[in-house]
Image 1 (cartoon, rainbow, N blue to C red):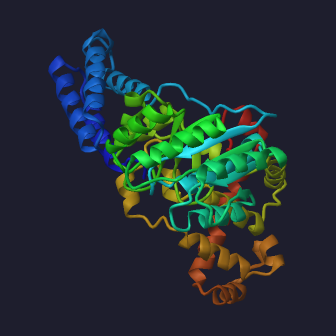
Image 2 (cartoon, one colour; image 1 turned 90 degrees about the vertical axis):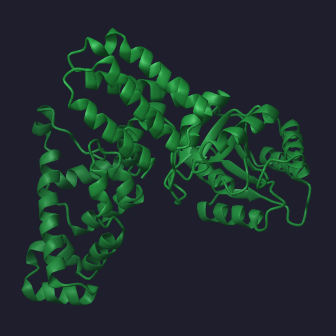
Image 3 (cartoon, one colour; image 1 turned 180 degrees about the horizontal axis):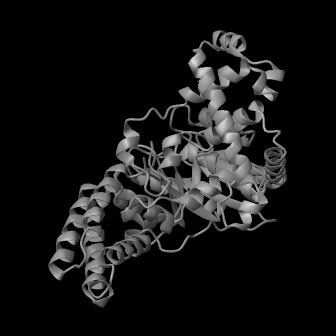
Length: 445
């Protein structure tokens, strides 16, 4: 889960606050010390922590908290507001214009996930902005870097410009840009070389590429697991290249939070996207307020809804809603919905977006895709008639389906029971009369 350790510490701190009917200045100072220690342990830059806790203390010790009827809640609100500010405050979108050429230059150290992120970003903007993207392979040093980009491009059906056995990254960048003009590509993403650490040769090369292509954006890819060391890296790249934004990667790993909470404050450049998993769809626009909510354990329902809506087009949603209302929702549709949910990411990553999710309890739950595979095997072992009319599945049919899917009859019974319950619930949620009463509809409805 994103920033799991930091999340748990804030949950413990907040649970103590909520039990207090009143807060004294001493209470606030003590809580602020706990917040400071939690952030330092998460490898957040010391100067950032000092300013953050100072801002919280100044606001909290004023009348805003001490005179409040719910001081604990008011204090938590201040922490969330200050963390949102720390993360950049307002969302900052990419600089792109429809109908003109947009050139993005990806920079960063080796191992940060720059090549994969270039492909993810091209795929996302093609889908969201209807761009025609071209990936340009300018990393001529790392073994298999060009091949990696070509494989990613092939998988996503995105064109890649590359020159094998050519050690001239500036020339490749120029020729790639010319190719994009000739091919009418309106989005060009340059995947440049990285190093294990910053050196003069690397930075000179990147400066030369920048001067040669005049990019719309220079995006620094930062490994979210590097902690406050990312600040030193970002400072140097920004000093020499004047980067326009940051993409944080590997936030699904053992990320303590140091990079995310330090980088914007220290270099004054916004985090624009985050990488949240290994799939080529696991990249999201960065919302400071939503990330603050997730770090503090308040969930992120808006991002969950965005994910759900992005996975289903309007026509499909209307068709499904009609099936619910006409009681024509069958096991084929049920399987399709399970796959849709799975494509949104891991179940654990979705559950952490839910406010109040019990993170400790989730550790003991199997959140792998095993159950999805079992469900798929059971349904695919049924005839088309059985999938459309589950009511005809008697005891002998259940035994045959279990045998064919390599499962137990109890598994088949459980699936059929779950399907019937889901069918009833979905029909109720799609009922217009319930919508009028203010009941929540599913994101894909």
